[in-house]
Each structure stands twice: as structure tokens, then as C-alpha cells.
Image (cartoon, rainbow, N blue to C red; front, side, top):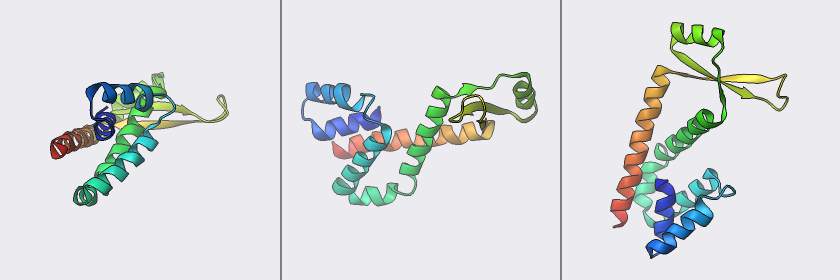
Length: 139
């Protein structure tokens, strides 16, 4: 929600208006992450070109990766079959089932290793830190 709050703060002067824009627009189902990220990028590029240059090759790809992982964890089915549990004990790899267009006929696995989780955690910490610094930068 830090990005939502940053956008709200950019467009609205009062706390009441910021709360409303977050509630009615930014948190709405029809206002997805990709659109918010594009608006956010435009604002950063326009208001803070030096920061944008520093962020464009690391921050934005990390943000996209974090959201992709979040969507996997939220929407895919954890594979807890005997085969998956055995694989986890051997490789420390967690599998999620991603169904294709034909629900019964095509499914793929999305997997995460323990090392992947550490990388995701590191990206999340750096991304959160960057967003918090942006609030300070605007103050």
C-alpha cells in the first residue's frame, strides 16, 4: 500500500481526500497494479528525474517481481501431494499449481526454493525502504 499512499499524497492535499482516492480508486478491483505502477513511474520521472534514473533498472523490476510472487502465493494452489512433500524434503522446493485455460488438461508448477524466498525477502525490504525514502524526499 505504500505506492497507493504515495500516489494519494501526490494528488491530494488533505488526509480526507487521500483516504478517499485510496478507497475509491487505488484499492478498487478495476485499478490494477500495472496501471498504478505506470502512473507512479511517470510521477517519479517527472518530479525526481535523478531518482528515476537510479530506480528504473532495479526498483521497478523488483516491484514487478514482488507482485508476481504475491499473486502466486495468493491465487495458485499449493501442491501438497505426497510427491510434492517428498520433493520438498529432498530439495526444499515449494510447488504451486497453475492451471491453464483447460482446467483439467493443462497445469504447470510454479516453484520456489528457500533461496528464492530469501531473494524475495531482500527485494521486498529494499523496495519498501525505497518507497519510505520517497515519502521523506517529498517532505
